[in-house]
Structures are given as structure tokens and as C-alpha cells.
Image (cartoon, rainbow over all chains, first blue to last red; front, side, top):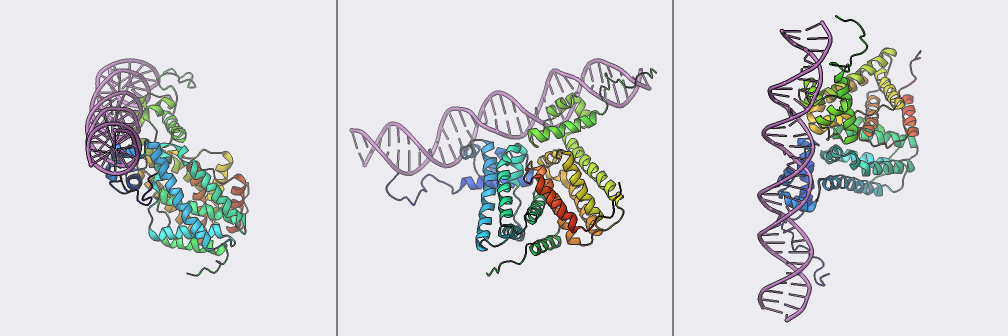
Length: 196
Length: 196
DNA sequence: ACGGCTGTACCGTCCGGACGGTCATGTCGA
DNA sequence: TCGACATGACCGTCCGGACGGTACAGCCGT
């Protein structure tokens, strides 16, 4: 440990965040070249990195895919915790938070997490973390729910929407989306006075 | 003209329905080797056909994938029409039919349509027919629905369940499944006296 | 304070294997 | 004998990833 400047670790980092750029490039590739067609060469090119450079950060394709789902899960989990924290431990708080996030993402036109599909295409086992996460999420929703069945129902509707985005099946339109969200919120009972 | 023994067809046309066997083999491969790893060689082997034989029935991989989604859609559409015919043009008949089919499939432990994922992995455009089908289905559900929003809600729950099967994410258990189905049927109103 | 050593970040070439697709060659049933 | 159906050897391309560089920064004995 160098005793001076713990703050700056910039030294041998020619470009900031090659890792992030690679991840983003992979996502983009998956989105518009098909989830099964992510070639490492292409990812490297799109990220502005050489093939060797890419292999440095992700020693194997499997690791890259892993990182993709990890990133997705982490992002979502973060957003969820934030949302939930806002409305303390009120009834149905987790379910409501999930709905809120969905709406938020819809508003931002957030691109769907195609990285997940890429991972799945390579090997179904890569989705194991997602499986675990989803199960935990559902349990939390049920735990804080006024009615367990309602929690499951909300969970499934969210997944239905997600699957539409994921498969690039823009089946439902904005109006239908809003309608269902409104209905769901109605079923979840009055929101606990959320200012700001 | 030997019209004897139509039963045994062991030689040139060794097994009837090479096409079906190929499709089935492809599905199976997709399911347990990952949707992106369907090699024509492997499909041929699993179907008990030579590579050339496979290429005879499906001149290209794209055609095979197309056939996979086509088959899926046709099967589902057939089941839906049957179900719907039973309960005439009653209120929510389409939505109810959808739910019924879901339950049926759940009972039969029908393996998920991994072929869809294989097609998606190769090229997202292959799902265009699914997109069209889903849109029409949703419209029909809304048309026969007592409440349009309810139709969309049911549609999304069904898709949520499907996505769970598709991604091999066995998130919800049997009890939760039954609970949601019951709730959905409740919301759809009393079933119109289904005899037999 | 300098020259060597080590560690980090990245580059670009190369190889072996996998995979989609072609083709010349059967083999039956009618 | 014709044509539908099937075979399996073969070709060309693409891709994962191994490997051997390069450049630069810090530590270190002297």
C-alpha cells in the first residue's frame, strides 16, 4: 500500500472505464444483432478496445455474460431498495416499489436488458442468479403484502411486461400500460402519502 | 404393388414424419443445450436423420427456426379456438380460455417452447409472427371482455407465467399458481355453466 | 538517481475447432 | 426408370481464446 494518495489510483488507466464500455457494447450488440450473435471481436470493436484488451478484463466469454446479468441485477436491486426506503415499511411497500420502478423505466424509455438474453442463449444456467433474485423478491413482496395472492399477481404482471420488452414484443400500448398500472395501484390500496 | 404390411416402413422412409422428429429434436436441443447452441449436426443426430436429410426438409437453419415458432403458434391457436368454442361468445370468453389453457399446460407439465428462444437468439425478427399473434389475441380478449383493463391484466399475468417457464425461472410454486388463477377467475366473473 | 524488476493495462496475430451449407451419390416405392 | 427422400464427405467462414508482444508506473537495491 503506497502511503501517499490513497485517493488517486489513476495511474495505469489510459481510458476510464474500459470495463463499463465493454459491458455497454455487449448489451448493444445483443440488442441489435440478436442475443446469440455476440462475437467477442465485435464487442471489442464497438467498445474501442482490442480483442486482447477485452480478454484481459473478461478472461472468457462466460465471464462477460455473467457480468452482464450481475450488472442488471445490481442496478435493479439498487433502484428497488431506494424506492422502498422512501415508503418505509408500509403495507404492500415492496410491490408498490416494483410498480413504481416499472413506470419509471417506461418513462425513460430504458432499453431492455438484452444482456440477459445473450447469457441465456449461451447457457441457461447463467440465469440462476436471476432465479434466486426473483424468488427473494417475490418473498419480500408477499411478506409486506396485505394479501399474498395480490403480491404474486403484481409480480406476474410485472414479469409479463418485462417479457414483452425483452422479446422485443411491444404488444401493449401506452394506454393499456397506464390502465393496468392504475388498476394495480388501486388494488394495492392507497399510497402512503408520498410527498415530493 | 405389394400392398402388404403398411405397418412396417423400416427402409427408405424408415420413420414417417421425419419433419416432426426434426422439429422435436431441435426443441429438445434448445431446451438443454442452450437456445443459442442448436447445431444442425446435433439436431440431425438427435432426430435420427443425416445432415443432408435435415437440409432436405429445411433448406436453411432460418427455415427450421421459422417452422419452430410457426408450430408453437399453431398449436396454441388451435387449443385456444377449441376452448373458446366451448363457451360460446360469453363475456370474457377469450380471457377465460387463455387461463384454462395455461392451467391445462401446467397440469400436463408441458415443456416450455424453447424453440422460441432459439429463434430469438438467432435473430430477433423471427419473433415477428409472435408479435402479431399476441396483438391479435389481446385485441380479441379486450373485445369480448367486460372490462378492457381486466383483459390486459389477465394477458400480462399469463405472459408473466410464460416468461417464467421460458427462462427456466421456476419462480412461483404450485400453490401460488393456483392462488393467482383462482383470483383471476374470480375477477373474470362466474363461468358460464360449462357442461362436460 | 538510475537501471533493473515486477505488475497492470492493453494490443494484435494466430490457430483449431465448430458450424452452416453444398454436392455427388445412393436407395426405395410406384 | 423416374423422382422423392436420404446419405455423408467436404468446403469456407467465423469465432473463442491462447499467446507473445508493448508501454508505462511504481518499488528497490545500490
